Image (cartoon, one colour):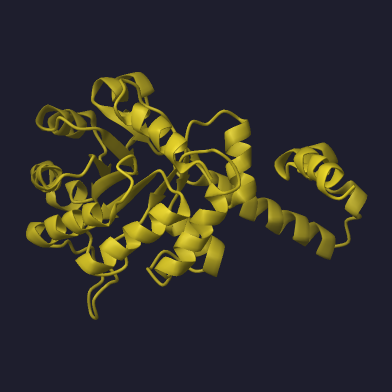
Amino acid sequence: MNCTARRQKLRAIFNGTRCIHPGSVYDPISARVAEDLGFEAGMFAGSVASLTVLGAPDIIVLTLTEFADQAQRICRSGELPLIVDADHGYGNALNVKRCVEELESAGVACLTIEDTLLPNRFGNHGTEFLEVAEGVGKMKAALAGRQDPDLIVLGRTSAVGPHGVEDGIRRALAYLDAGVDGIMFVGVKTRAELEAIATELEAPIMLGGSGAELQDPGYLSECGVRVSLQGHQPFMAAVQAMYDTLKALREGTAPAQLQGVASADLIKQVTRDASYQAWQDEFLS
């Protein structure tokens, strides 16, 4: 993998003036489809990783090793710069350092570390957040674990929703002071919230779980947003397609009558069949 080239490509986007929507990917095939369609980056979320690897909900039962292994499978399948949601770093600040080391080795171009208290404590059913000092410690540990300066490390917070925009800004400024490359905000819903954030931050912004007011890339670009997620519908659509196909077969539909099945040509494209055929001709003849 040429990790440096893809990291530099993504860093140029974060340092630029426009906002992109990454393609939500979850395995080598989905990453190749996103790359073939012209997406400038892929996004591999912790929630989708839990679904893909374990078939489990997003409640932090996935391990770092499982997450990093799947990220590596995605990265080595093509040249798409990959952004990953590293959740809370899988533990305390020392675990965060290890997390960054593993994900950098896996080939990711950007990762986010959040300040949510995870997994949920016994008896707690809401969202809890780290004290800012502990969050800062995690950000410093993440940066200490980074060996390639082109790897992008973002602090992440979802405090705006439950605690208000002022707390979100307070946390973001503390993490930027610790040295992270930018901030991911989850759950910013209004233009007023985003404009308040943009006024206080002089750093690249990434958004996830945004409100309906925050879907215009031109407006987002003006507010310093460089990456804005659109959700993870590709995986959900794949689940529905698999369910519908298996259901139809179980109910007696003939294979030749199934709808929405990938063509042989598409399968050859996403498996890079031509390259494998060329390698066979060169190395096995």
